[in-house]
Amino acid sequence: MIGEDERVPELLDPADPAFARDPYPYYARLRESGPAARVPLANGTHAWLVTGYEQARAVLADPRLSNVPPAAAGRPKPDSPAQRARGCLARHMLNSDAPDHGRLRRLTTAAFTPRRVDALRPRIERLTDALVSEVAGRLAREGVVDLVDAFAFPLPVLVIGEVLGVPEADRADLREWTYRVGSPADALARGAVDEAWAGLHAYFSTLIEHKRRAPGDDLFSALVHDAREGGLDDGELLAMAFLLLFAGYETTMNLLASASLLLLTHPAEAAAARAGDEARWNAVIEETLRHASPLEGTTWRRTTERVDLGGGTVIPAEDSVLVVLAAANRDPHHFPAPDAFRPARYLTGAGRPAPHLAFGHGPHFCLGSRLARLEAVVALPRLFDALPGLTLAADPAELPYRPGLLVRGPRRLPVR
Ligand code: HEM
Image 1 (cartoon, rainbow, N blue to C red):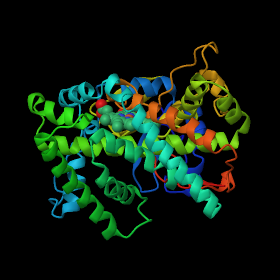
Image 2: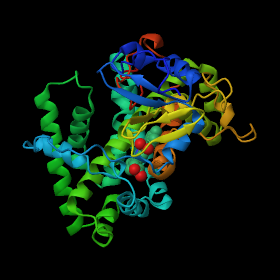
Image 3: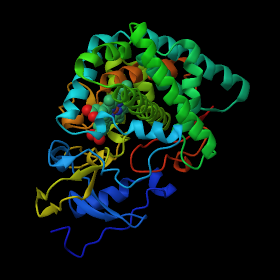
């Protein structure tokens, strides 16, 4: 049994910049030792990491693993606006199990209809075109531009602004607050981050009031309208606004940044995509989701009882479990030559590859997958068509990556 034998995997330090940049060799070694392993973490705790494809799917569909974080008993009561905002975010559907989860999810699914999502296309096109011309202007003036800061970050935030029906005049605030709360812990002064949390909290509270009085044609208005019948209280609605923002922007930002990086480092693939139709771009996007999964791991799960994963792997009750999507998506049993970036595997007629797990699996499967794919298939061709001479202005092996086990993508992407 892996949990009881003497094979102790190497210590895992998610803050290590070298690990953040390239965690794949570590995950491959872990997977070779078994599809799930109890790993010692640098902070002195341990967790079970699931790295095999089959076991990842099994764990994500298993009701014996709970998404509800351990009780907050004994913690100090939130007393600042920033702590209240953080506390409120914790009440969202990703942190819930059945039956609460079903109640929260049903309403959101009803608001996120394919028709409503697809209707965002012209607005995403306009937002993209404006950002691409800003990038072009800055390239002409400044020579080098950070594509994360100028493109991959603002686009998803502005699109979430559309989803939430945030008026144009408030979008700059939304962008600034989001930038601050999403910055790595070492990047900004604590006061600036707290102020941004409080700003978002106050803003979303007012937005809900406003949508109730004067609903628009945005998705969030539909959610606010249906909330009363669906039994959602204001705290849950507020948590939903936070969840849509955070689930929707950081992930899509990493998808856009990683896809751009992969295309810049694989010029033949970029040329093939530019010469092809939307199916070619779709293949680039699916392969990026697999090869550079924007969510490295899902949210943490906790076993509510002893779980036997088969093959001698048994996870005891009350242990923390992380499904490493980035590792499952490179499982060689399901993806031949898993470390190679090969969009062609997702072209029709190429034989059916296993579905990647970048959007998760089971009851918490991503609600925004259609929107994320739409953003990418609008944004990437427009960027690469408008700026065909774009090249990387840094050594790809030296690019800094976001620390931690949850999200994965370059922090900066300098281009010229
Ligand atoms: C490339 C972009 C994206 C990726 C890779 C991604 C990935 C994921 C994954 C893996 C999960 C499941 C997490 C878990 O089981 O712990 C998830 C859940 C979720 N995602 Fe996404 N996501 C993306 C974009 C979006 C967007 C644009 C939105 C909405 C605006 C969104 C909304 C959600 C929501 C609401 C959930 C929670 C679903 C639930 O708990 O039932 N995501 N996403």
